Length: 194
Image (tube, rainbow, N blue to C red; front, top):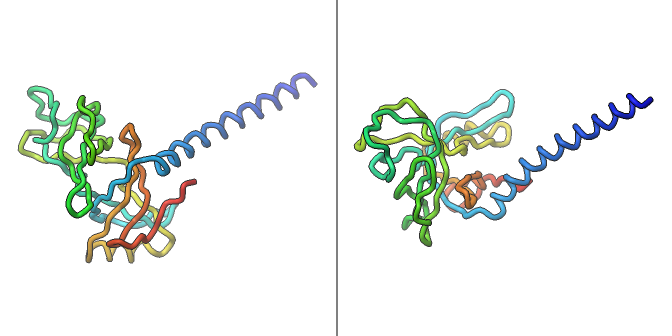
């Protein structure tokens, strides 16, 4: 009898830990969507469809390739990229889209972003040739946008014909979350908070 009670208590405790972890993940994402600074990014399409999750659009942004010359703290003699975090400072352009103006490897710039600018955290893949006159590819974790079933290919084709944008929320620590897909000024799809 005592052993059965211990198993029930252990099962309940394990369930509560799992529920707590999932709730923490969902609340973190929702906090960024609710409180993060909004940036509008110009997108470039790649490819739709995932057999398990349905239609999606793989995206590249104008900020997915930045000139190596804008990275302020490149180690002396670096000839190959090392995988690691990179913080890209964005500034709002005249067309309301945000563009990369500087970057910092490993940690945010020592100087805080002035008004009208924001730091977004990305990942620089390792193993690529590096020199000051090349571009660096950066992944932000917002390169896939899932769509309702059957709409991925249509959106993919439309993106190739006219400009689309992605509204992204950026947390204080630089973590980005997709908020909405826009066709011009029209919101096509918006991510729910939960």
